[in-house]
Length: 492
Figure 1 (cartoon, rainbow, N blue to C red):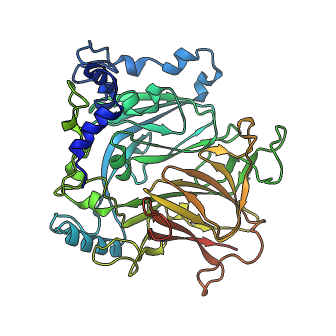
Figure 2: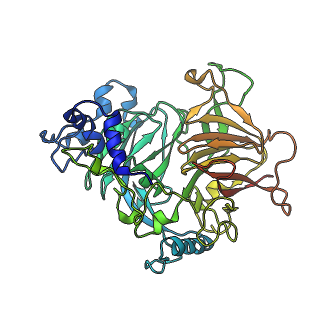
Figure 3: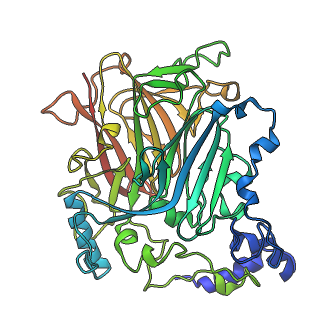
């Protein structure tokens, strides 16, 4: 194994230039991100010893109104507010067959099973989520975290209350000011016991998401993310999740952009597919992720932030975040029940992928209806897909569909995207996605392509499946297959 102490020395000497003091000044904020509460008195975005500014100034100054005081977006009816708690720890049920396999793996690789750790085998998947405080409903903590839905052009004020450690909320794809973007190394982190009001305006309708951007590898894996949907500025928006509604985009794949054309699609159903995978050792192993929210992070030495000794060194007796072997798979919080398929006795190497149907073993899961498709003749069904896993995911549908947006951008539907256009994805073709990519797909029940749909259940010719195939992000295809997840689709 490489000597990571030496790696730190090499890194410092190879591409960090200037005197030692110049390097310290350049890297202090990157290695030791300031917080808006700044409990150490180091100053926000400043050097050690700088007088601490009034922390309240960062919650009462209305950054958007200062920059755009005459904008029409600031009318009282065009401002929306949200409260999000970072973080909440919850334990959620997973199918019994999955727990049994997880127990086998923990016994083989960790040396302890769930009972040894004092856990309840029926309700033991630990998740960290971004909680929501919703008027009339109180505090809500779910996996995935509660989504946020707004209308294009609305003025958004999202208060993040922090209860443990330091965190941020990054609005992935929105691109607000650095102060409101939630990337700790480039602005600040929210201190424990403090809060911050993020302010931004979504100028593009589409599918986005938000997540904690502190120790992202760990915090994102543990569940600190949620979907962010921006509906177009049309009557009725923002729409109720699940449909019906209106989405920015078009289906005329053969024509170029028409500024006077119809660039919105009315849909009847909306489905949310958030692909996720988990390494059970990160969630159950008492020597793993539970070592702390800063686990595997570089130590902060304020006097010498680039000192080689501050770099994390891998330790065979600790859970290291470079080792990710998923054995739990979910789509929008609905878990793959792999039953008797998949690797045995904790062996999660390649060649024998986990596979099964998400509808099995998930009775009572509130998100099941949001995932599986029950189509009616003449309907248009919008699928919002986010790859929130650490795997390469191939999505295949059993019928033709249209890809109308990528990364929150509607193809060929605005002046900024006039050189792109939507396209038809033939049934069975793979739509490949790496982590954090989003797609919007449209199934038009009046245009399912040629031939019969792909049927996986001969006993029920109308009951077919979409499939999500997870591949290891390093080994890739074809030998790195991790799981095959089937999503039920019922056609009329």
